[in-house]
Image (cartoon, rainbow, N blue to C red; front, side):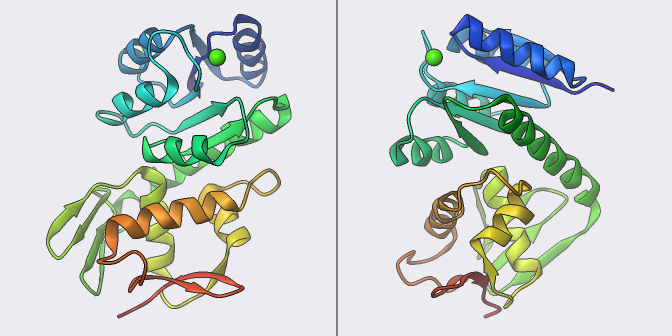
Length: 229
Ligand code: CA
């Protein structure tokens, strides 16, 4: 069955060319031209993926993202107008899974869409793999839930997947490039700073003191690993 993709973008020509290209690839695409309509269509259509512009009339992309995250785990790919770290960090804070900087090529966009959809499929396949506990952290794959010392921690889908990937292979060090490929799923277009931003967010949520982590460790000059404490 064709995957449904919602495009939330107020610049009509951009929205339409994205729709055209997605449909050429066999997806079903829907457009919302402002934040309010985007939120409404996200809830009513329950799409498989959302492309969400940041600068939008009525509600901006960050607000829409935050609202969507209250009810849906759908992958959200933010379209940011400028290459500013603050946008990316804010996007991840609001629960976005990925971002792409304007102007972007259609090939790049399609690769990202495909990677994010594939990741979602893998998640569904892995739903029955059970629970692992390391130290005070418990990861329940079927419930998509992480607990620390018995308390549920609120993670975005991407944070969950990064934690899961590292914890399943505890003590093994991965480079940022490897993590980008394995957790984000794209090989050619990724920005490795994405990994650092997500690690930072994850540490803030699961570590007692994110400045001196006990779970997600940095191997200086190499990358990251999960410590089996
Ligand atoms: Ca815009």
